[in-house]
Image (cartoon, rainbow, N blue to C red; front, side):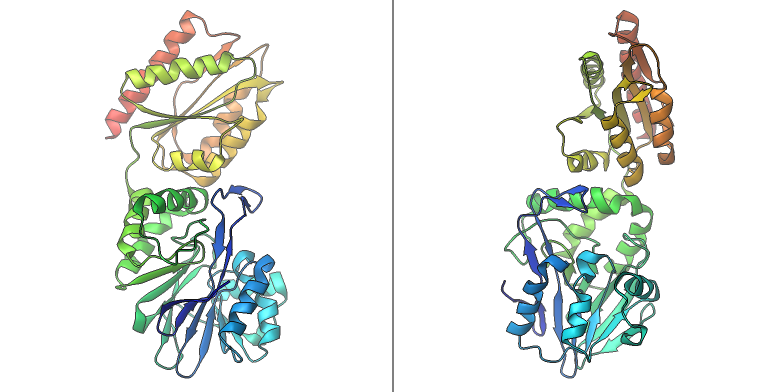
Length: 392
């Protein structure tokens, strides 16, 4: 790997993971990812900003050697998750004079994860600064994007902001900066949907903070950097605080075709009512694409047959993930079929209850949908259209 200059005295020295297709054994990463570590060299002191995933430790060490870093004064950890801190024990062994710089919550996690000696950790407070000689680090505590320990590190003189996971993207690219809005939008929205959306309530205030700092370069822990910060900040503002759109997302699974026929009927009825439809066959769909669709959806529909006494496992998985990532949808419902009984509607409704959506009347039928069921599906489409109109 090569070291890449960001500006005088600040370099990218991380690792690109071109082939990673699943993150945390959960999040699809179809375009790979990167683990961004940064070197800030002042006239008197040198600081490493975050490390990389343990599997990529030789990339980081090689880059440090390439830069002839014989002395490292500080290792700033913005977030304790192992894809950023995994190499910390090795770095502390290689540079025995270095100190870890982080906040109190992150300190606790680093000690628990790695057994880091407390005497090697410098705990900082919000807005505290650290002078490297001509380069001043200022720390901004930003809990809950997306862990309780997260913080941002600013190089005051250069208007560079290291944002950790915040504002990142899972995108392996040779480009240090990203300038293609279309390419940025897809990767950044997927990342927001999968990782940041559960914390949308905190994000607006942190966007205000960043916009007040007059930042020239945003340097996240994953994906390319932004030398046009307003672009990514604008996207996040819309995703986190904008009103949901006139969209219904249908996540469905079918066993013998009856549920799919219901989905087809409802989809066509919604289109006829002027509602935009996004639908996902859960046997085939990338859950990241489903998450992206949920970012701005106003209505969520889980469609499932009954397996024994409850919903199909894929529908259960979709309902669990939907509740976990907390989209801002206002309405939700369940449709599907059963053979001889079950508690599917209650099961799914209870699972998505944390979203605090209004649960619209379900359409749950025995066997194939007949005329009265088709009428109920069309009425559901009208209700969704009316609800969306009331909310606009």
